[in-house]
Length: 273
Image (tube, rainbow, N blue to C red; front, top):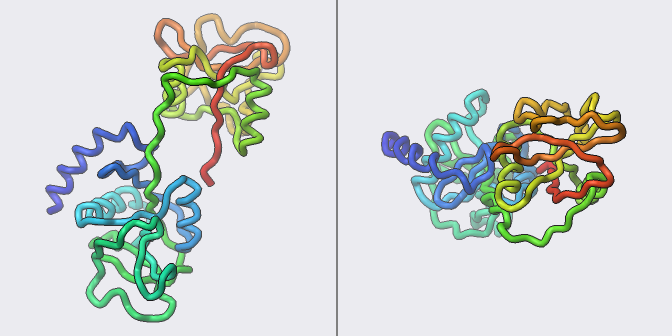
């Protein structure tokens, strides 16, 4: 069984393009393994902040997959189990999934679930994959089932604006123009550039003509570990300068323009928590 599961893992790990970064794709689901311990209700709330729910399980393969992946993703933790989306709090005493899907599969440990007051939420054992009813207030790791990443629009009707206007818009939405800290973030934004946009604003700006660069969200400006300046940039221009991601000779790179007069498309980056 484990060898078959390992074989299946090799297959699905080659098809993760539609799932967010650092999630596991399986049967059109994107599972996010959260190495943060909290109670059941708070875990479900954090999953809904991602647009998802605590993981629901509808077959033995998915159950085994979550147990196997938990061993990898939670390897630095000493916890024995993690929250899944099963609870009997919604319609006592019946067990249901928080995402509302049919409760059509179970893998309870022998003697579970115990009909004991206060044990109303299910946790999955990392060691053997069996479930047990637990106190919902216990702090545990958890697994979310989150939506796949939407593909970017090939045709669009997005207005262009200055860096200042774009940053103000992102702040109104609870975020900022994107800070870049990894190749994954750089190439995610670059995918929009190559799809149909020639350039796109980042959160990187310089109040002093390009001598130093700062991210609008206040994070460290380690952008050069993910990309390089286009040839001839940053420009030696006075005043406030703001950086875009564009392309030169089919390669993605940074370049800078005036923050108020130059106009470009933009996207926003917002914390999930």
